[in-house]
Length: 195
Image: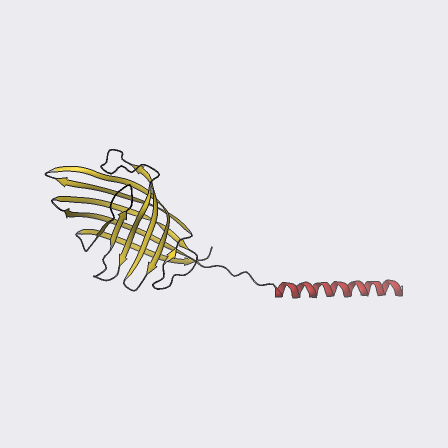
């Protein structure tokens, strides 16, 4: 009986030591902190007409989507997205001597992007891939072509909202905004959250 009692006491003591050791191990292990992400939501539309030499150029652009950042953005720093979604449409015509010529008509998917803000603007640039293209346009730009596009959400008069496109199939870099006669309306919303 004495042996059984001492074995039971020894077992209880070992069990207690195991619980304490396990408790010390779990409290010594670093806790996994939740990583904060930031979602940048953008929408824009551009409707412009501007002279290009003796030619008048008409443009229409629109788009919306999101960029996800792995951290909370700080003023003036450029951040690259960890993921991106969105669609951008761009159509341009030229009016030459009363004739309207289709220049380019593209639908693009946003693949990735960058984000930067200051007290006077928010700037987003996108790497995009053409998902739809009209083969009859002046600029041939087949599905699968890649290029860049971007928007600026201006907060001051000297930095008005603008949309830019370029490096698509020989298309020159073009900027459309309040400074050159083409009107753009850009809205950028920043949403912070955790995964």
